[in-house]
Amino acid sequence: MALTRVKLELPELASTIADFLTTAEHCAATVEVIDVPGGHHGFETVDHTEPARRAVDRAMRSVLGHLLN
Image (cartoon, rainbow, N blue to C red; front, side):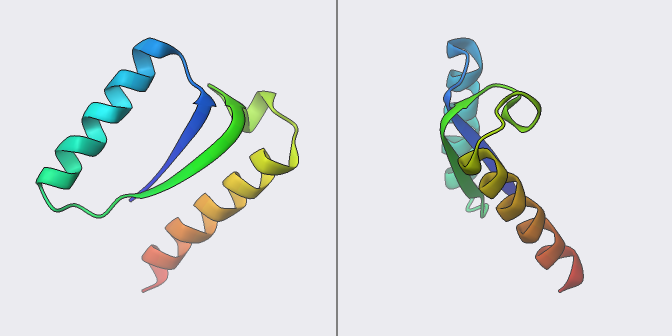
């Protein structure tokens, strides 16, 4: 599973992401966390930056890699 996490996330969503990652760790689930420095919620549509583009590219490659294996 790939999860993008933005630095400037809404506080109410950031806490649910932290809870999800804690639960995943306790369940021994593998989650690839892709941090987006300076990113906002909805970064893939609102942040037209190189870090945002790299995060989208990395997430797509990760998911495709899992689907093709």
